[in-house]
Image 1 (cartoon, rainbow, N blue to C red):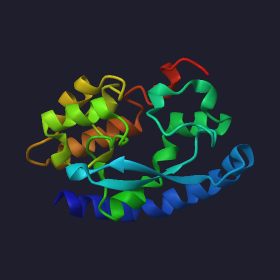
Image 2: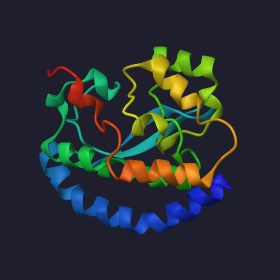
Image 3: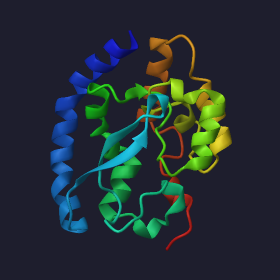
Length: 188
């Protein structure tokens, strides 16, 4: 049922997301002087790497590390707005439609986040399909606290509930959570 929900919601939101991405593509391209869309390798279910699709919100030279490890100076001016409104996540609807992600689940980590990967192994989080948003995100827990994040993410395991996913999606859409881990990082 969860997969059916993801596909139906993804198909319903895809046209809106496509228009929104198209509208912000030019400002991103002009500011970043690079493609407005990029792929980043993340760890999915059973630790399988996959390509996550995102709108560019940081300068091209920004290293591929967790956002809490980079300073706010790496964020583009357009990126600040996109991150605050969570528009940068819209291309991930493609990941939902192709089955590498779900709308709700643990946010996928980077392969170089070794502490997070180990904590998620211990807590069984890699049994879950990663999500665009999840319980940890609406509680303001980011990847800078890997053990706590893995513990909270593991709480999503169990029988799927449409009502729970809708509550998490609503909380995300209405601004719950910190939204931008890079905002707390020291500037470079």
